[in-house]
Structure formats: structure tokens, C-alpha cells
Length: 500
Image (cartoon, rainbow, N blue to C red):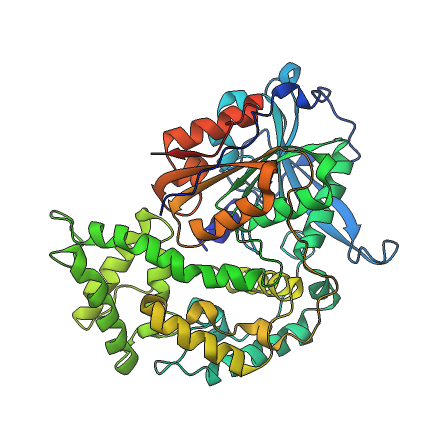
């Protein structure tokens, strides 16, 4: 599997309250960087990047401490990539492409989504990609999970049909034990704070005084944490599809956000799935789609349909619910959910979906587990999850209690090594948030909490669009133009804006 293919696999995984803020940040706020920064990295051809790699893309490896509390101790490798600025005379610095996840990579992004950036942005920045700590081809971790535990409907903790969570707690213990047994010392040092420290080591190795960044999804939290830890090392920061920065819950808040994210997005799917002329139409009216899916999931809870080649090898209610969640990430995935609903109603299944190679799934699952579980302590008592699941099921039946359930972090054997970073309004005002109004994974409600935490340091662009990832992906021309202008010139809206 080439790195380009691997990165493609990893990515496959209400109106805002608008307030007036500071005037635009101008381009003169930070002096331009020299055309050639002094770098300690040895750049060379990229191996295993596949035919889709831009021939200009270069790769390098950087050694960083595994444990920043022991900087002279064991080191790990970070795999880096770059495409230099296209106009050296206009070069401003380096634009870090911070991936989602945890478990996402941007190693192929300078050749991929980086080339969607307008020329005036590409002229000004070296585009920097990387595989975060723990993720191959950086020094990698692996929990050695059982094959069945790699199913998306297991990694996301769906309760039993009656709402009980005994099986989820048992699964959490089994998976956490595997990570403790097989993850080695590195899995204890996966965290967002360490990801931010790694980025600052990359900055220093590049010879840059300051960096700009485009962080997406989980990358918005990494970018916000970096911005908090190293405020004067930042130039222009774009945070796209934003995570709730709640320091008491961290990833628990992200998981819980799915219940509102589904409520925000499902009506858009229902309108599509009931539109006349749609070959995958499932109902005559949008109002029929929700009860139809709920009835179908309940029937599959009672009577699963065998599904050879899938994981698990049956179409049950949780697999349907997980397919719903996955399909709401972007409208281009709506047909997969509609086709599965139509097949299940007929008592059949479509061909089993293609699965990434198991070593990739193992690696991604381990990075996700280590980072999510090390960032903050999760409750250990089943009673805490039982109460939350019951409340969630009653209020949000589409997600059936999953967003507040116990994932493997409920049994994680290692206490956090440090408190989560609290995002505040202290520091330079150089952040632009861009957020779709309907985003199943990082809903607007959570993004507004990051916006509130950043205060006068940020301006937010809310986009009337549907899908996860806004800028140059599933947003609109108004949002894209606003972000591109900020990256290219430093011009930022004087206040929060709504892009219709």
C-alpha cells in the first residue's frame, strides 16, 4: 500500500450567534520569512507515495523525544513532507497541514489537498505534511486488537438494543488490555500536548520563527493547543470543522457531539432520500425517512441479516446506525446509506464494503486509543455511562446512546501524565475558524464553544453548507474566499460572518 493510498484510507475514516470582534489582522503583523529558511532536515525523494504524488514533494525524517519529560531519553521518528513555496520571492513561511483523527495523516497532503489551495497561497508557503507520532511511517504503535474489535460498530460503543452496556464494558476492558500488552512504551506518550510539542520541534528543524497552519477536525484541537502552548510561534491559523475544547471532557465531548451532529444533518439526508427522481429514493416524503430508519434498525436488532465478508458478518441494527453516522459525513456518501436501507427492507445486503488492510486499521486504532485515553481521565464506573446512555437514548433515538457510552478509555490502565490544555483568549489575535452549519462529526454547537474559548483571538466564518470539512471541500465559495484571503494576505473579517 502506497502512502497516498494509506492517507486516502485514513480520511475515509442552527445559525451562529454573530458577535463583533477585532479589526482584520493585516499582512504586516508578521515580517515575511526569508525565501530559504535555515533547515536542519535532510530532504529527499519520497518513497512509497504512489503515482499520485507531486514530483515536487520531498520527504524527511525528524527525531524527537518519546517523552518530553525525559528529553535525553529514547527518541522516535516523525515522517515529514513538503512542497516548497511556488514563488520564492513572495514566500512568507511554512503552512502546516494538520490532519484529523486522532489517527489521520497529512503526509500526502502537500500533493493532495494542498494543491487545491489557490495559487496566491501556494506562492507564499511551503506546504508541510506529516504522520503524527505513533502513525506509520513515523514510529508506529499497534494494540494487536482482535479482528472483530476493529469493526467500526465496535470502535464506536453502541449499547445493546435494550440500552444496557455490560458488553461495552467488557469490550473496553479487552481492548485496553490488548493496548497495554502490545502497545509498548510509546502508547503511553501519545497525546495532543505531545503532538503540539512535536510540531514545535518540526518548526525549529525547518528554521522557521513562526508557522501558519490549516487544521481540520481533530487537527483544530491540535492547532488550538499548539496556539495555546506556543502563542508567539504562530502566524496565521485556520481551524476548520472545529472540536469542542472542553478541558474536563476533551474527547468525551467530541463523541457526545455526534448526537447533535446527527440531528443537524439528518434532515438534509431525509430531503435527499425522498426527492423525486432520486434512483435511491427510500420514501415519498422527508418526514417518513426518520421513522423508517428507526423501525429498520429495531428490526435488524431482532433479526440480523447475514453479510459474508463484512465485519461483523451480519447486518444488525448497530451496523445500520454506524453506516448512517458514516454516511452523514458528506452528501456524496448518502447513496450508501439509502442503498443499505433499501436492501435491508428487502431482506438482502449489498456487496460487503471494502476494508482497509488490517495493519492499517490496527495502527490507526492504536493511535486513536492512545491519544483519546491519555488526554483526559475517563470515568471507570459503569453507573456513570448507564445514566448518560439512558438520557441520550431518550433524547436522541437516532444515535441510540452511543455518543455517551463507554469506549475503551473506560478501562484504560494509564492515568494522564498531565492535565488537558485549557484553551483561552490570551495571545495574539490571528485565528480564523471556518465551520459548516451541518456537520455530523464536529457540530456547530461544539465549534461555538471553541469560538467562545478563543474570544478576541479569533473570528469565525459559519457556512450554510453540509458535510465534515468546510474549506475547499464541503463549504461554499463565500467561506473558501474568506479563508483564502486570510492565508494569502492576512486580511480577516472584522467580526464573525455567516456565509449563505
